[in-house]
Each structure stands twice: as structure tokens, then as C-alpha cells.
Length: 248
Image 1 (cartoon, helix red, strand yellow):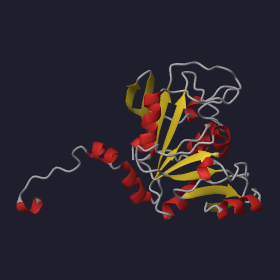
Image 2 (cartoon, rainbow, N blue to C red):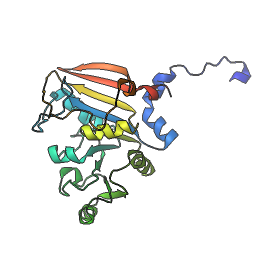
Image 3 (tube, one colour):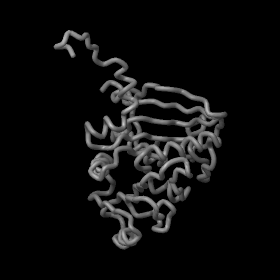
């Protein structure tokens, strides 16, 4: 076009275009899935009471949004503690195609008959050599794809590389605080969706939305840039991107 004398402007609405195609762009460029961390928490950052009760922190409209969201991702991932506490099915509840299910369980705590391992879609278990071989075999007999890594913990980046090789372009992380902390500390979160309910749970033993090691000082805190803040009935949905990702 330029050679024919036509004025060409490149990069118009580039940022908006990149957001519209963020999953595809990440997967094609890096070969690993685009990862979104979804969390539902109280005003004081709790995701459950001290007894472990978490149903339901947010309202019905927020929950419907999450069911639809699942249908937009290739896979949904949770950690062992979430399965043990909530025994989720991780389906789209008829609001889209059901995503593949991924469980992160390094020690072998999740029972093979958990709902997340029920047939219907591809199921993956990422574990370590420290988990019982008989437990891994029982899951394989149920059709679960078991991927074992050496060491005491599953390496988050290696896991995402493996999922990319299997054609999974997007992952919605719905785990608890430990899983969220592991992904954030590994620098493997591309976007966050935090639902905040207008309640205060309190309690030093109540689970928080992000756990793990955490940072020593505020300079080490992971910084985000707000993309949007929406009201959903009485809840608020915050969509944000890590600052480094926003500058790519």
C-alpha cells in the first residue's frame, strides 16, 4: 500500500486489539497458556471462614458470570485443598462448553472419586514423585492423565509448558490461597479477576485469597494495573493485569 502512495498508519487501537486476542497472542508467541486467576473474597480478603465454609461469598450474578467464564477457557485448574474442601465439579453449568479440568496435588491428597475427576472432559493431574504410586495408578485407570515431576513441589512454569504442548491455550485458575500464591510467585499470572463481596469475615485462621511465602517488603509487592471495575448486584468485579505484562 505504501509503495502505491497510500498513507498507512500502523498500530491503531493496538492495545484494545491485543486485549481482544490476548489468549491467542500469548499462546502463539510463547507456547504456554494464557493464565487468569479468579478469586472470590470478602472485603477483608478472606475466601473462607475459619471452619472452611466458603459457599457462598459472592452473589448469584457473580456465580453465573463464573460459569460462563469457564466456558471461555480451555481448562480450569484447582489445588488439592479446594477439592478437599468444596469437591467442585468445575463445569460451565450449561452456560458454555465444559472446560478441561486440572488438579494440582503434589502429595496425593485428593480422593480418586472426587467430582473433578468424573468423566466427560479431559482431566489432568499434576503431582510429584512424593505421591503414592497406587493413588496415581487408580487415577490413570479412571482415564485421568497423570503427569509426575521430581521434587516435592510441581514446577508451575514446567506444568504450563506441558499444557501448551497438549494444545491448551488458556487456563482459569480457581484454586485457593496456596495455589494463587504459587502462580503469582512464579510470575505466571497474565490477568486477575477478583470478585469482592460486601462482607467482613475476620479471623486470623480464616483463609486469605493469596497465601504462600509472600514478600518481605512493599517494594517486592506484585503490582497491577486496573483494566475495569464493575458492579455485579452487591459484589464488585476487579479486572487487572500485572504491570510487567501490561508493558510487553
